[in-house]
Length: 433
Image (cartoon, rainbow, N blue to C red):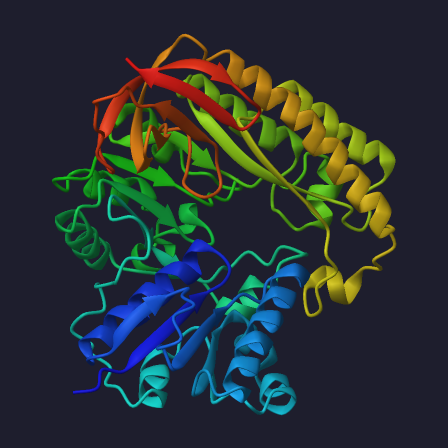
């Protein structure tokens, strides 16, 4: 009997990863053989899960679509479907400009996607996924959409308003993941701290984290994408007191100048931002704060950028990402502000900020030399293991490279104690403790 094979290609963020994993499980239930991000020529159907957030991501998505259309025209594959964020923004343009695509579907059209693939939608397995990550960690998407409306951001147009998932469904899904070997849950959403307001009329992220921490087998819970405005106090207490919650927080601050924060429509000012960061560090002394900043947003003068640079220099964040502002059509800034800062100025500011952060990262890492730290093993390759601390998230943060002594074997997904022997800006080197 011929088995149909399908290739799911995932672009963009971890939320897209989860969407692909949900689709993959449904397809396997329908009898498909599923591969992910594969070059397998025997996969005659390709589904591209796209990102449509900023210019580079859109360009990557379009290039990927055209690559597979070329393969289709050459007879290598039979069908190409495009789903996800890019479709939400440019559905009609995609249909018109790339007619070779066999179907386009948005981010919340799973039954329609399956129908287009001559497959059935199973509503009894909505908490099941086919993991594309190593089985010892998994992303857990706790909500969809966003209610904030930051000036530069297209997410509300793409993903809609904030919709929380019920605690019961999340605990059920996390339990399935733990039973499958997951030891680390990485909670993701456009804004974790907004969780529960629509369902329970209050912010209940702290309560959710406590419930998830009670699941047998889960040893680390990591928090991504926490909005700084109206940050819930009880979440700080949970991070500080619960041993299963990583002393780690991904909290995009985006700027420090109050006028820039106002122009960005962030709902917070300089003083409130500093108060929150100080409070996090006071109550959780060993916390690692990951944050992002945007430079070159309309209204950012040299003086305002210097204020941001001084802030980063003084506060010495553990992980920093810097993005030059992209004038996004349909956003508040795109419709109301002039993109009047030259691209070379934006890039120069981004480079200066990242160079400063590299110095900070190296200094922070050198301070860990000689310390014994607990890590999780992500992969093992001959005489070394690639590991992470509780202060590092997969894919986006640094790694700990551990030398394996001759005759010693290490197991992916297990926890070990290592002694840090040397450091670079974004890597630590260690030996077994």
